Length: 124
Image 1 (cartoon, rainbow, N blue to C red):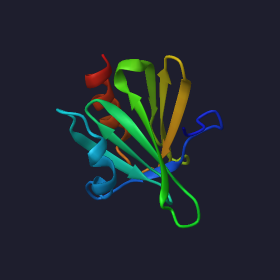
Image 2 (image 1 turned 90 degrees about the vertical axis):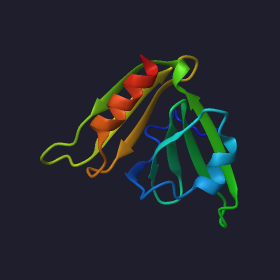
Image 3 (image 1 turned 135 degrees about the vertical axis):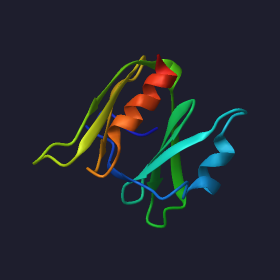
């Protein structure tokens, strides 16, 4: 499992489509649909209509991967912070029962308001 206790997960930017579909789609359950994907250097996060899937690419070759499933049904609260004039990054904080707060940081080009709207739709 990804160690979320060490601050934020990664600073990510939106990908063009579902670039890691072949890797993540086999984990989908019936009725689960892709919403968005955000990637850092090698690690990435996929948002679906049921959960967040955080993927930690490990090792020198990157063949080993850790997939952490964070279901919306366990979210107790969430917070979105938009980018500003000088602080160009935005962030999403999710509080999961049994895990605690997980923070995702995004580049300024990410649409954090859309992420917040989508989460509200599935969490509330």
